[in-house]
Image (tube, rainbow over all chains, first blue to last red; front, side, top):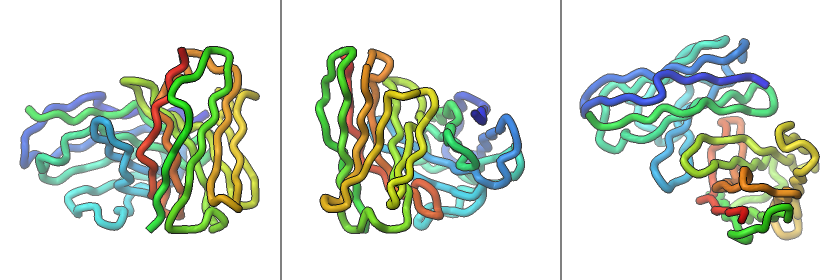
Length: 107
Length: 116
């Protein structure tokens, strides 16, 4: 199985801050990398697929980058509704594994 | 727009069988998509369970070994998960999702299953 490791596991930030979450795969996955946002008690929401393509309706303050084994999710200026847990997921080979999550909290 | 709705028993006894159904509305399950199950134990992260294609082809998480079956019923526009010999570690919120070229773009609201 491909292991996905996110860092940091948790992050405190303020509204307006720029934050970056990283995701590392245990081997190259090309650009088969997806990002999800999950709020408490809710289903995950797809933000980005193919490493850098925003899902329809996702604000442009979200951006994704990277290829191979190293990827990033950046939020350019935090809004109050962005405080949530973020997961990366590889869709290169089954089982399609997720990172352990990054909890983004209000400072 | 496509919507997914999970259903099934909320409580299953240890060593029993967990059976869940995901009804697809607003679209056809026969479309060129993979239909997937993802689960999330309480307070933990997401785990990919497995998927079924409109042809009936399946992929399963090896961690679930031979306990898992995912199938679809095109006449009812739904797909299902069956997990046998369940234990407390199978307690989770189970989500069904659609996989498009754009990834897992549609999710059900999730259904909580407790093994006890």
